[in-house]
Image (cartoon, rainbow, N blue to C red; front, side, top):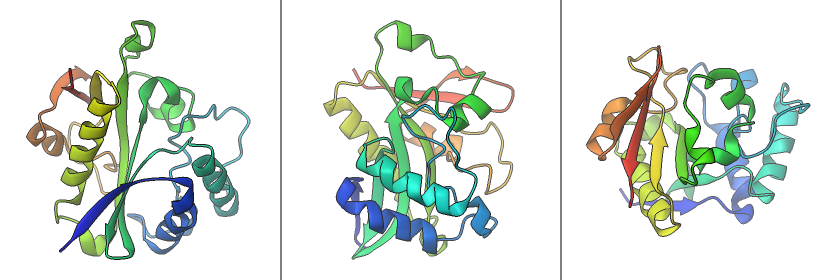
Length: 196
């Protein structure tokens, strides 16, 4: 199986949207298809993401504006996976950070430390457990090192909850990729890999 990891670019916006349109989320409900607009480097204040159509519209806008950043996994011409990876300091005002990540430390934004965050994965059901998430993590780390980041950070749940809530990947994935626990909250681990 030949998997190619490509960085998301504006030219891939329509293919990206098609992947989310055609790939079931954990509960297979259209109203829960996120298109990853909740995790981006834009201030979510006053934005309406609460219908599928509006999320799709924002997605195209955000990809063209480089607000949603990450990687797509291709098998031939088909997208089979997505990994959202963005600069942590740029994403602290996004909807999901404000809603779910308030207990995660953000001290590095005032210390000139550059952190690339892995926020989520979406992998087509038929392609799960084939090492695609591991390949995403490797690529994020490689590119982040080349781009001058100090760390790559991830936020897995301490314990598996369910597929819908474990979209940030399992802690073991990060341990096997050289990450260590940097901080703990009640439900999450903050795992970091030092790049410099």
